[in-house]
Amino acid sequence: MNPGRSFKYLLRSLASQHVQGPKKNILLKATARGGSTWVMEMIASQPGFRFYDEPFNIRRDNVRKAGLFHAWEELQPDACDNEKIIDFLDGLKHNRYRFMSPAPFRKFYRPITRRIVFKLHELEHMIDEIAERCGCDVLYLIRHPIPNSLSRFVVPRLESFLESDFYRDRYLGEQRLKEISEVARKGTRLQQFVVSWCFENYIPLKDTDLGKWTTLSYEELLLNSRKSCQYLSQSLDLEDQSELLRSVGEPSTNITMSGQETLDIMSDPDEEKRKRQLVTRWKARVSDEEEKLAMDVLSMFDIDTYRYGRFIPHKNLLHFNDTETKLGTDK
Image 1 (cartoon, rainbow, N blue to C red):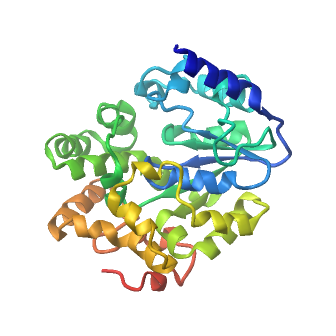
Image 2: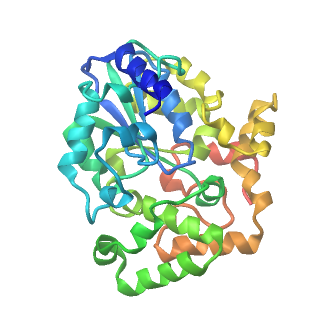
């Protein structure tokens, strides 16, 4: 390891301490490029919080340094060691992996913390178990599969999903999985990425009692920010609702991964217009036929949370009656 990186980890190890308070930690489950960094930082704006940003992302140097997880397959239900997962999260809570602590110069750094938000993009099959055994409330964040897929550069677990006996035997069946695999391997890039989105959201949407979780869509958080922040504050026992609402308007630290169009939209002084554009702008990049083909993938999984011709989720994942009117128009 180079000296600069070694110093960085030493600094992280010495710069903060977590002392668990009486309130539950938060497990933020989302899909990559679905607004999860933004929402994680919103929660981290609250007093006493620290965050762990993708502690199972094996592409990250600090995860590799922990030396526990080396392949995506280790995080999939077919080969996952559940006890190892729980022990690792428990170790983060008890300061056993100090080099993974938030950097002291990153936004919302605090030397002493009392609550944690864990941001996870993996382990769909374990979310309820993690919540129960690690004392977490679950926040499930979802975003329309087309803009979510357009924002992604890679879908590293797609092949693991397609080869999964767990998903074949428990959910999809051999014939349906074969048809899905055909689309994933021979379809357009957008179709391939939407297949991954469906796998990544299948268990939360099809085999989970979402009434036990706090659920939120990227679109409703943007369009109905004030009510969404009230809902988050009440559901997750967050103290500073005004700071939460203020954080909605702040771009996440990974905004530089976005394209120039997004950066231009974020500079628009008209806040309501800016939010509507962030929800609808993807349609300019996708024809009606491309949209239909992508949304047909959801039908293959029997997922109807998002539907052709709509920018926002179906009403079963909307919390407020006026959210659609704030969009101004649906297609």
